[in-house]
Amino acid sequence: MTDVVTTRRRDVTRQRLRDAAAEVFAEVGLDGASVEAICERAGFTRGAFYSNFETKEELFLELAGIVARERVAAVQARIAELEQQGVFTEAHVDALSIIQSALDVADEDRLGILLMSEIRIHALRNPKLAAAYLAQDEEMVRGVAQIIDDVARGGALAFRVSSEEAARLMMTVWEGASVRAAMAGLDYQDMCRRSNEELARVAQLILEPR
Amino acid sequence: MTDVVTTRRRDVTRQRLRDAAAEVFAEVGLDGASVEAICERAGFTRGAFYSNFETKEELFLELAGIVARERVAAVQARIAELEQQGVFTEAHVDALSIIQSALDVADEDRLGILLMSEIRIHALRNPKLAAAYLAQDEEMVRGVAQIIDDVARGGALAFRVSSEEAARLMMTVWEGASVRAAMAGLDYQDMCRRSNEELARVAQLILEPR
DNA sequence: TGTATCCGATACATAGATGTATCGTAAAGT
DNA sequence: ACTTTACGATACATCTATGTATCGGATACA
Image: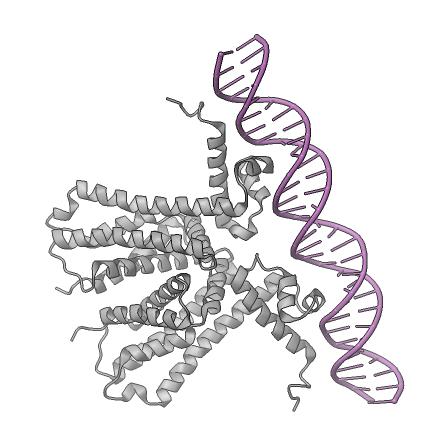
């Protein structure tokens, strides 16, 4: 098979440009990022960019799609992993930590939160992007809801709202807490801790009181 | 006293520029907005702008501060209004509608949500703005928490979490729902309805089951 | 190894935004 | 009413970003 060295140069270039763009978009936003800045970060000149992409916006849309698919895939993979471990059928199932670990994979470092926020605000202004954003949100909801369903079925836990409502609530709280933590300048570890604390409180509300 | 006509021309100009900037920033973002575009919207040329502000960013910061203060003041005013009406001591107090009406005043039309989101993402990148953003968030939390406290004291309702936690949770959910509704392209009325529905579900979770 | 092709670098043309200096007019003071 | 001052309009110089056309070297293939 074609190995890394033999990989078509174009593919490597495109990927390096995407990675660089993700960083720059996260740092200064779509409009604040010049094509020049993206290329510099990737170690190219603008010639490479225009030979690979039409516009900055095209690259941004491509990136937004990839990020969305990756997030959904990460949660799906986590579900499969948990199922294979037989976690859901164990006696002393810790619902909260399972959901936390599911959201953890969808969580990201500081730059990841910045990039998602950047995508979010452009989705607010761009109907096409909005549709994609909401669609991936729904996918994530379904994924997390499935975990909740599995937890409810396997363990002896009951929930006070539907699994989808619970999932959406937890995702919303998680995002809000992450953003506030990132704003407060906390590092990745503290951000996760803070988000988990808030999530734990919400989980207590959602769980049927024993 | 000096009436509207006699009002210092400068003040009027600054206000018109601020109003125009709020619209343009909401529509295309801070970086997407040219000074020219803001002035055109306000009915001026750039000469007026540079005679009143140093940079676009300065105007944005000023605007962010004003918006934050207005939101907090609106909630505070709503509390005073509700207290004066003696709502909290009435027998059949409807907790949810009280809190909804408090959040309603902090809510805004589509452009308002866009502007807040724009402020939010810049707060994520600007420590000084972040501090201000988080401070106003805390103020809002305290305001809403006070309403919750009053509801709890006056009525026969009990809450499963502290009033501040409940307030933050409701604000987070409200914002998330508003943003998603705005993305879905709903008009103002539908946006409020959607947000209220989600808020009602959360309120059920927070309230001590009878 | 020679050759054709691919693709990123370079150079250039253009557009748009910024900031400043100057001018003219509306408003304030007497 | 006359003068002065305040302030927005105009014009200009500059800077930055964009997009394209062309060039040259690396890569694939024989």
